[in-house]
Image 1 (cartoon, one colour):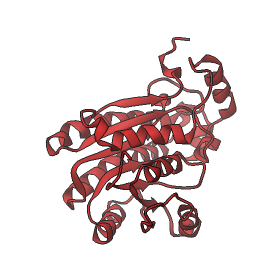
Image 2: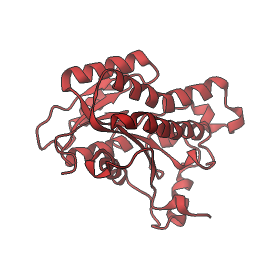
Image 3: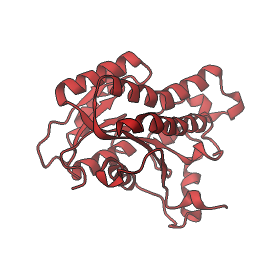
Length: 261
């Protein structure tokens, strides 16, 4: 198993349709001990019920910790609590993003200053803060791997993606700079650009079903991807098999991103 003996922190689990859930299942089935974070106290009961469904052949303790991605203090308290209970981790998945609904539904030029700052803070800066705090409190084992989830809307203008595309572009740039800085510590940082998937977050994107139809029509594989397929790619990046890969954005999108039309 690719991740046997490794501890993986999944940040941003929401429900069983989340890409993070696909990642968690792949990691667990590949031998990892998986730890979670959730956003609010209100979501704790639902998340804790969900994670009990995780494959757990080794009988690991499965637990979720509250973490407000918009607060450095909350991130620090969360990561310190995780270290106190589980020790160092070998991988962190950043599956955290948020934009105000009106900033996704309206034309991009109508984005407010506050909405722009909020989307970039939660969706991009939270990765920087997490990496910094994890490094400062010595949470990461040697050869640890950090992976963040992004989307093609960071590279091309996607109707309805709007300010989230800008935030994901900032996230992808942050991945490259973090990889440069943390490489000397043998910490790798990469991103997975997943094809469109029907998640709770996707419901905020106008005409999302039409995006799925276009991918199915245009992508070389002529189908959309699953959360498990994305999860397997993340598992690879957490594993020792990807030990020379850092600073990359890997597309898991049935090949859609290579097409010129």
